Image (tube, rainbow, N blue to C red; front, side, top):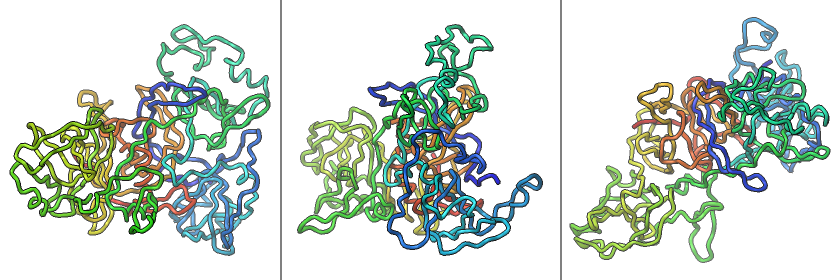
Length: 581
């Protein structure tokens, strides 16, 4: 029976690939393709053929957890809400296993989860159903209680859920690179990879019919082949076009050659894939530390002789206000009394205290810190200071002054920034679809900002990149659709690929932290560009990887430990996403 992959969708948001600049030995900085089709893996194929070589990682660590556990055997190991399969086709060989069940989520091969003792054998699962402690049921056909099972020993390392990038990624640097089911013999490899024999590429416009597409010049452009045409045979699972991305498990040697093992369990020549260096380290700001702790993004630290503080794990201080200074919250009506003079003003970012978004992000590369002497004066003196990095996040006190005809905003770190150098997320009224106290996400297409709210309180703010516009050519108009939606499916990482009429095929394995909210439109991490604050995508809401991870852990439904994805079902009970101008 076909495995039950969540969110199997048509291609959605995509982006063009920019050639990388390799560094020794193989570091990358590049822009890449983005898409909106979720991974779909058939059960009969999932994990069926391991590449040969030293892939055995040894016995699976059983840990110290009490009670029985099982390991997932397939790349999509479905977790059902009940011991029933979903409706299947009305005819064909799989009809006997269909039912009225609903898929709750899925595990990825190698994942270890705790279960209740015993199994329940039913006609639709002769191996017996396991009941997970986190809820849901897994058929024994897709999992095993033998944690020394060969498929668990050879599974890829689990995703790094506590980090911005769940996997390492590689960039395919040349056309025709094969992904192998099994590593071929040396003579066979020379035939499958003709460049190893020193065979020159065709230097004509298209070559002959007998010339493989990957040896043709294509006028220097991207090959106009389809994903179907990339399918291989024999030991080759498929071939890749330059610009495809792979999620990498590890490097290994087989004979004299070095190889990459991919997370999907395939092997590819080491020299044809450049290890990728993420294009951005940008991330937004938590506005409420308690929300950050709940999302797993922060940790408590105790200073000697001081009250407990909250600091971001592994990151610099967020610049919280000094004691006695205006806090990182929104400006209040009391601030007007503090300023008093006509030369100063209070920037009210909300209609009432505590509701505004007291954060902003540096717009470009020319921003500076400014010192303001006597801000209460009618014409305060302003002095230019050090530069501020592009995209840097600052917390605002809600105070502003006019100096030399320019408005400056005060930060909680006591320096000032010109208004025109900042992107300030505007406050947004809670849509009626979000109940009082409920989590919801505001995506502002005009300012290219995202603010996460709990009820009427903003808890996280950042920059995004939504879909590009083209009024003249509808085929190039990829704007993100406005509306109020709910998150439907969540994937720690999922492969996005497809065929683009005007740009050929694209493929990115394991796009991180994907949250679908409408069809193939999703919030997801984009590690291939650093253009946040500007439209960039082909429809999805691009987030810097750390932002995507923070929001993924904050939104509902939550993804249990060691699961790879969850679904809310057709009705959609996930966190509200409000997209608007």
